[in-house]
Length: 360
Image 1 (cartoon, helix red, strand yellow):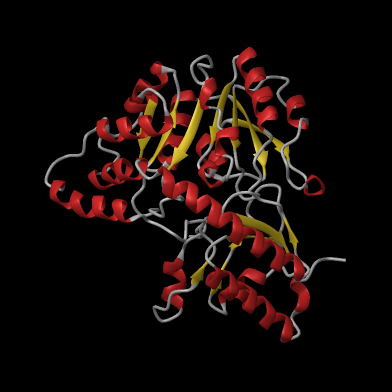
Image 2 (cartoon, rainbow, N blue to C red):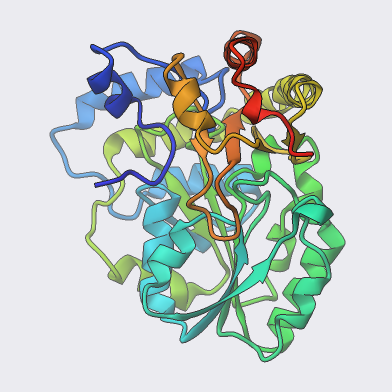
């Protein structure tokens, strides 16, 4: 069995006598969780003797207040992946349009759906361009977009996203936009499509507190849509109590930490600029991402394994549709973790293993 995502420090520890690596394969905020979130998780222990609220009332109220939307437009889940699976089960699109590369869970969740792919190009910096508008005809049943995209980190031009939304609304296409990394944008308000929800009944936005609040082990995500029939269908599509008392308490606390998110986004932007410059100075091609991770390309197709041997994990992106071996993603963390990555790269180069440098 091969794990297809980042953050698998357990396999590394099993093969290295329990030692933990510098994990840059998972994109988690290095400055979290906030104290309020940790305190809420601790206090939630007292409620383990009862079933969690199946409708997550307190969490939905808190998230709704934070997002400025009706809590009735929120469906909460056991992480965004849980919500994604339920969406695929309820919508059952016969045809869907995805980006390539993008988050692999969309394709997995869609299963036997006829899937078309819009190819992002390196010579365009893997940016989403108006080329995608031609792929909306003939109209698919659903379009899944990740903004900022994973693994490229590119945020789409807001005007283009609104063009896409308008085409989808006109042609009765479900538009599912994964905004799980949008809170790492320093200009998040420009990019979200929340204001379109009231009039676009087939618009669904995915969000999660996993990354910004550094709680991947807690699992809280949600979708936002004004389509009340869809919300009800999502509740019916799986087991009740899918969000634990811990996750619900975490969501209430995290929703009150907007200032923490804004500060983190600014600090991470500075670290991202530093890391992008340093990787580029070592001859690597680096995608101009805007989230808390950077996609880069190296000539060495086994760079991830060589870095792991030196205690640093990055994400090998060769299993992303549209990418080949030699593409990697690193999280943007604190300066010490970035220094560990850079030192490992320098050690490899000093040892004569300079294949990771940029292709000529």
